[in-house]
Length: 111
Figure 1 (cartoon, rainbow, N blue to C red):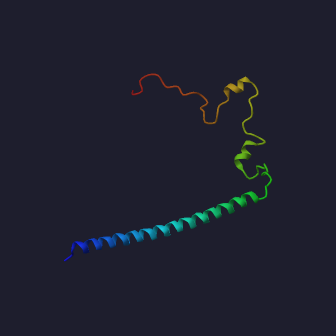
Figure 2: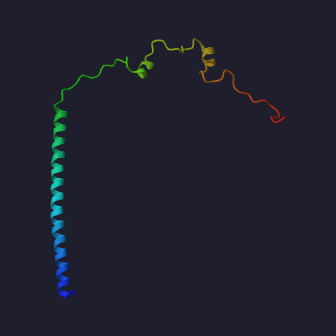
Figure 3: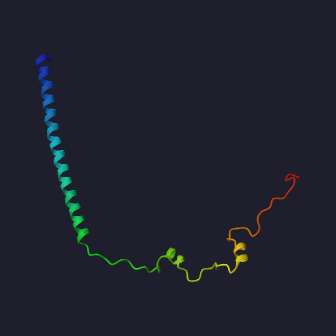
């Protein structure tokens, strides 16, 4: 049977062993973090030095041959021409708009 003294010796050795394990684990984790931080800083310095040492490229050309969205805005022959006089301006409708407005029939709809 355990005595009071052996009980405290057992718990004391367990606490000391746990503390030592914590100390060495913390030391190892901090060393790994420092190593990772040093590698990250080295990578950042390398990236930054490459960015600053890269030759300055000329600005890109403004040719719109490959971009259909830019070609559409510079269309040499648009399909919709500007109206010649006020009569054409008023009557001009989009291709989705009805030529005459909808008029509901008067009267009882259920007969």
